[in-house]
Length: 317
Image (cartoon, rainbow, N blue to C red; front, top):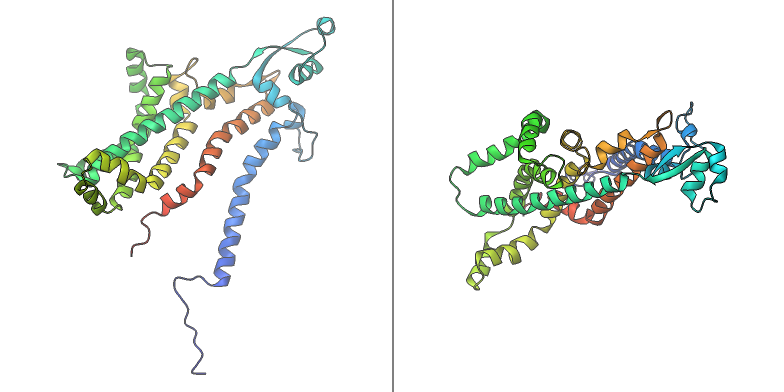
C-alpha cells in the first residue's frame, strides 16, 4: 500500500474534467449556432413558409429571399405580364410567379459596399494609431502616462450613444453627415482606445533588448519599430484588428443617426426591407446571412493569430 498514491497534478486535468469541459463547450457551441442556422434556413424559405406556425424545419428551398434582396419588384396585372417576353433569369421568373416584375436592382449592394469600406477603413486607422500610441506609452517616458492611459480608457467606458446628439450637431455643421469619411473617423475615434490598451500589453511583452540590438546595428528607431517590433506583435495586431472590425461592422446606432442614403451601411438597411403586405423575412434573413460572411471569413483566415494573440504573454518562464 505504501507504493500507491492519490496525488495528482494541479495543472493536468483529469479525464473526467476534460470530458465535462468538452461537453459544456459542445452544448454551448450548439446553442450559440441555433440562431445562425435558423437565419440561414429562413433565407431559403418562401415568404409563407417563413411565417408559418408551427415553424417549418423541413421545407422546399427557394432563392426567392435572395432575389427579393437584390431586386426591387412591382405588382402588375396578369395581362401585362403575359404581354412581356419570356423571363431570362431566375429572379424574373420568381417575380412573375407572384404576379410581379423586376423593376431595378435594390440598394443592398451599395449599402454592403459602404459597410466594407467604413468597417475596414476605420479598423486600419484605429490599428495604425493604436500601434503608434501603444509603442510610445510602452517604450518612452511620457509625462503623466498613467493619467493619459486612464483618460484613453475612460472614453471606452462611456456609451457611445451618450454623445450621439453632440456628434450629430457637429457633423451637420462640418458637412460630415451621411459621408463615408465621417463614419470612418467616428468609428476610429471609438475604437482607438481599445486598440491602444490591447496593443500596449502586447508590446510590453516584447523584450527591449531586441530593439537595442537593432539600434546598435545602425537601425533608426522607426526601422526598429517596423522590422523588429511589429513582426513580434503581429498576433496582437491581428487580435486588435478583429475586435475593432467586429465593432465597426455591427454598429447600428450611429449608422441610423448619421446616415440615410449615400453612406448608409447594411445594419440599418436590412431591417427596413419591406415585402408586399409586411416584412419580407426571407429577404431579411438573406441579407443577414450575406452580412455574416465577410467577418466570418476574416476571422477564420486569421484564427491562428487570434488564438495566439489572446494567449500571448499568459505564461511566463
